[in-house]
Image 1 (cartoon, one colour):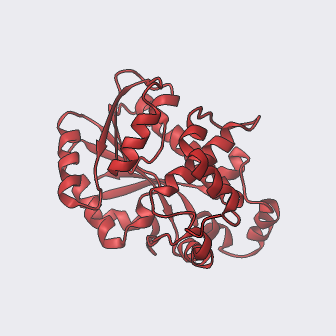
Image 2 (tube, rainbow, N blue to C red):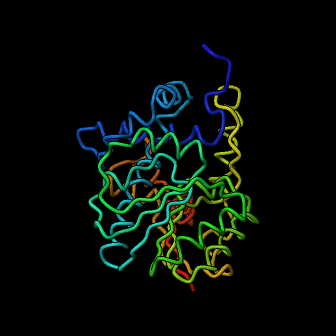
Length: 287
């Protein structure tokens, strides 16, 4: 067994998340079916889930996150007239290959070159439901990012931006710059992003610091005290927040012992509101 950490870099988290999608897809009561997830996860993704302490206990919010975004993306495209989806730090997401999206939809993926190369190779024969573009971009490089946004925005009327698992690795100033850059494109109208509270951020940081000898270090750093209101001064109005806790109950994917925790939440003033803010999907609209 190698002494190298299970998660060598942020790109390895894409293999980890793909394995979660594979395990969900193989359940008899699966919320979604990703026929490509296990192949994309590969042996390393399987090893991460098997060897990372408590990895399976961490699966439920990631599964809920996937399902919520599936629903929000489809609603935005089908009901609200979005003609382009821009998936930033797309990882090994396969929505263009597994969701029944309209053929007219333009789907743009952006991630680091090694992710795009690996993904393109593995999915070269996979069916695509819409018009798919993939771009190799370092999203921490402002020039590369702005060039991508200009390219996407120039040929679109209404762009839906998705940042799934990206902002957690950015500092607050980086998020502010990203939000400002996205507002430069007039067609960028709605933004879906996962978001955690400061309490959830501290819990995640403690967990991964404890597991660092095995897991490696994950630079998780974004959990603003203003929560969704962090984005309002940046020109993005919060429309909704879909709590992983509440949505997990709806979807029957929750933390073990959730029923007891829900009872306790009703007895402690403010506990439910704080619990529901721990993590979820924010829906932001351009002002």
